[in-house]
Length: 381
Ligand SMILES: Cc1ncc(COP(=O)(O)O)c(C=O)c1O
Image (cartoon, rainbow, N blue to C red; front, side, top):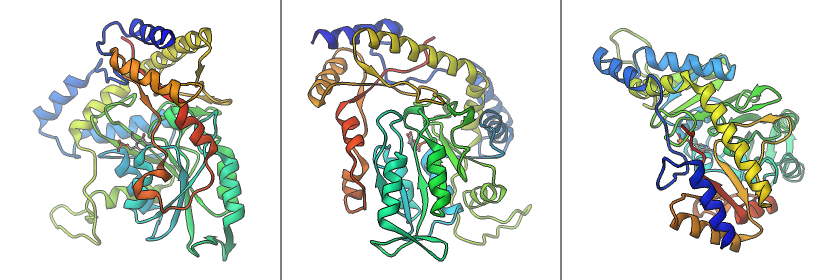
């Protein structure tokens, strides 16, 4: 109890202007209102107008990716991307059990079949060892394709997720993907501003995605982005998410069944303004993480820090308790006393829609799910 009180009081001191202290509250500190007014005054409120392409260009600048396509949210970005890389009904797609439900939902939206592997305790992201042992035991390469021995179906892609902004051991995952002819796609929804060996998260594989949901470092209210160096993938994502309409000044001709999932200009206007001071946001987030790190070291609670070779955006700070009972005690106390906290997601392979899916043993994911608590991480003004 004394420990719960001490942590809760510390968090309140970090965020004196918030009551209750929220997990991640957006701040609008730049040109957001001005750009929104510009949308309304110019009447460019759908995806046409300068803001969508300006925001895409800003994301290219930040991430170093050659192409960026803005969509209505991160889930849609992952869905469109999976279709664009050629996921066909029944194709296997490997991801990690500890992730937000959008990762596996997008696989199912694209009619793929999720397979879940374990995570690591330090990065909280996909474990290369778990992936390797799954591939070794359950797959074989037949005519250049990775085939699941259990189902006879092709496994086409692997989606690691950079949990809470902490980069996974992406190079080892990339090597395995190359060895097994698998397409690497990064769910970098949470990791805008995170780097692995000085290279931005989301730029290692064929493509990556970002989310600009209200709780992210930069928000558009709701929004997402596909990033890639592959022009054909970028064009395909843009095409199918813009109703698959052949460009023409007045004709409406659609080659195939498309989607209507482009980001509207109004959202991009807010996003562009947010990205204009993204460096400061990132600096502020890292400062807060540093303060938390010192505080939790002083009370002997494990605080999750950026992995080796990585620079994390510290999107959501996280601590680990000794066991589930202690975790639950803290969740109860903090939420009742004006500090919003939450546990890790329920492991995906245990959720009703995915219980039938193939998965490896997940001792690390279970360890984390029992102990982890996310604590308030908003930008401190
Ligand atoms: C890991 C992960 N993937 C995908 C998404 C989906 O993004 P959105 O909420 O923008 O649809 C999120 C959202 O927060 C996420 O955390």
